[in-house]
Length: 308
Length: 256
Image 1 (cartoon, rainbow over the protein chains, first blue to last red):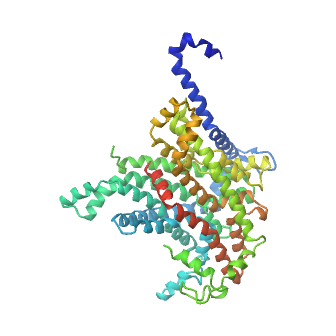
Image 2 (image 1 turned 120 degrees about the horizontal axis):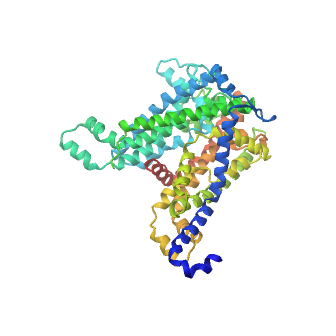
Image 3 (image 1 turned 120 degrees about the vertical axis):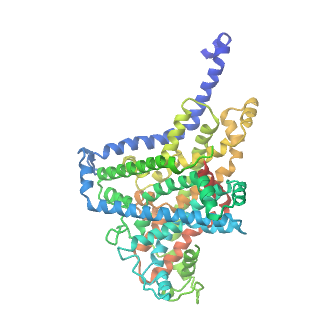
């Protein structure tokens, strides 16, 4: 009210300012749900940092134990194994699925008839890949008597016990991951479409073959998108959970060969109620992902090419 | 690419004993009893799990659309102090691995007495915690002409009316994308329900399916495949119906 009364005197100076404040108010009003949601994010974020330095079983109040959780982690063989499982899974399946995604995207880009149908067929698995039904399906496709081994036998190869042999169980999940290359592929397709056809024509006139065109035009112009897909896939893959859980019936077996990091975190935190230890594990993964992403961004300077 | 899914469909209509002995995809004899038997094979009829999942999915969609579109409109069309900072914070949460927040959130939900209810699965969706959808809608709303807002303001619309009458109707494609993505991800979600739901009558479809694996008997394969297919069918249906939006949605996020 007082502002209204002052208006005649200060109108020229304060009108834009007042408008700004009103925009402030409505801006914050629109963001209200999000602000509340951020409370559910920021407070747990710091709480989990605190819990990482405590011994906490949900029943008794958290007890400060300093670095003990982290010391225990260094000596925890299962944790090291889970880290190895996760890293192997990521290092093998991310490049394979991105290569498949780029390869298929380039083939589809050639102007195949019925592109939407092919695109759909390749994309659908990535929407289903993490569903329990598909992991169950995988378990049986790769079973001892499963279709995969039948097919191998027909070729005269004796297939291994994919899901029960510790040296092959992770392979089946890597194959499952590669099967879901459709979503990076769709992003590649959109990116390929933005490369001007004139570049390729000019290169062809200058006598560049397909490989040269790929190396000198496609790769550099697509590099921001390759980078985006790489970062996204790495982050997602390091957090794999459902596949290992369902494949192994919640144990990470056989012999911890599918014990993903997050699965072990779940087992420690929510079946043994080592909440402090689970928080410490979560923070180690968080730092790992952050460092990896930062390294990626630094390395990107050398190979990611921005047109503008 | 489609072979595994076709194999699943075909195995779900083969008589139990022939799933692994009879090769070809086309069943030699049809047996739909897998569907009827599988429906009642678990503690509760499968329709209960489907209904549970449906309730969670529908409410999650409503929550995501409401809260994310409000936030997106704020970020995309309004000028207010701290907007850039908040926007950066929002993008930052997109990168944050969910497991960092897991333990404290679980503790909070436990203290609120929300364990074994749907609240932990639903409330975050009404609070715009999924930054991916906000980002998607911001991208879309920024592409709409600014003149629309100006014209609405001259005609006397406040921000809320402008949002409701002008921006929202024009943003329907982005809403459709968000709805379909939410449907698929919530329908498939396994970890949240595993963590928060303990009573089997509250189970969602993925939790129910998992029970099949735990209780696997030689003869239940066909039933398990039948119910697996039932659980995938809505996703496949939504995918076919909303393919255009899905492809556009994912392509936009990748291209910035």
